[in-house]
Image 1 (cartoon, helix red, strand yellow):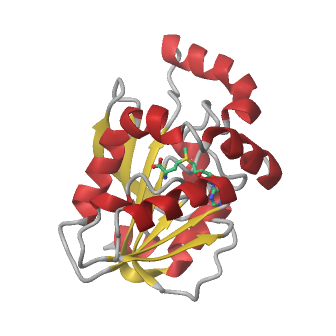
Image 2 (image 1 turned 60 degrees about the vertical axis):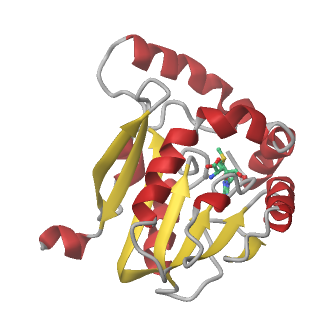
Length: 211
Ligand SMILES: C[S@@+](CC[C@H](N)C(=O)[O-])C[C@H]1O[C@@H](n2cnc3c(N)ncnc32)[C@H](O)[C@@H]1O
């Protein structure tokens, strides 16, 4: 999906997103933010922050910047920051995750929740997340990854894939699709509802994997 299709899809979702996908996808966000919140005093980048539904969960002594391609989703996030007086949110910026306008090593933590199946270039986006994260920082991904073994789940995911442009995400996206050619590996921190379909991953860069 190109940037314009994504913007169109999320323009449709913006008004209903929190009501539908707020609770439905809450477990993955909670697991990721609980992991991030183990330490304070860090600078966090939320990639594809959307309506900012996770922003209130960040501990107050971490500073958060959110970026998203969708103006409409960000408008909801801005309303939330103002309403809930989220003083630790430094900025909400319209930006493409595949072309981040930040210097190298700008953040201690980079987190992308329910985003990597949506972006047009997942591997390029992964390279950008690595670039802006400090070498000793953390990259976390929360996502659905399609089944690779034959079975009912893989059949449904492949059937759903034809609706990707309308859905705004790719149901047939596998973990291999994300990692291929990136030089990173992933460690699963948690598998979360609904139906254990979503994974919370900590990305390990080549140097870390080598020990
Ligand atoms: C399923 S929503 C997830 C929102 C939020 N992270 C959450 O936990 O609910 C996906 C978000 O990714 C954004 N997005 C898609 N492609 C993007 C890109 N290339 N750059 C930045 N944001 C993008 C969409 O606009 C949308 O807000």
